[in-house]
Length: 171
Image 1: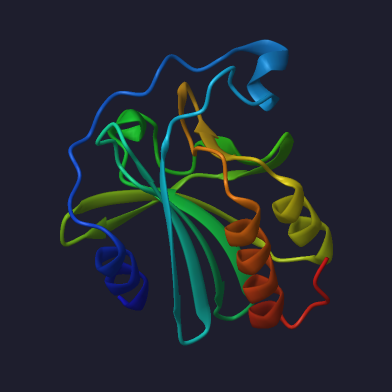
Image 2: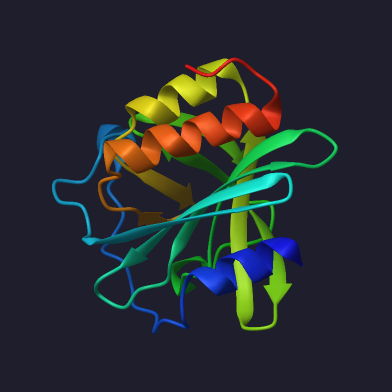
């Protein structure tokens, strides 16, 4: 519930739009030729830090979240309708820059609709990739969403907050 409050506080409801067709083959781990434009919002809560991309085109926001539950976790989540036909537990990946971290898609009902997410443990290696990434993607089945370019200040600050939450050395 805290996560929902955090994300809801960051942005107003946005109208959905269909993302471009996903790339195939080798391109699936490379950044798209052009990234969407938008703004980045940061928020921190007890044991949690979020960096949320809000696209200028009215698409659904994409949240990058580090949290401390039973273990320190990094997750990417969105309410984008592109994932509507992708089944629960579908194989997919979080792409941190051009580094793919494989996982399974999960769904979560919220007051405003459904979120899909993928998660992984926070590690020093992951934090290094976060600090080097220009953008982030979430892929599952034929669906994907991509953020715009993350400004260095926001990206480095988020990585530092994640390191603090996880109790691991920052990059």
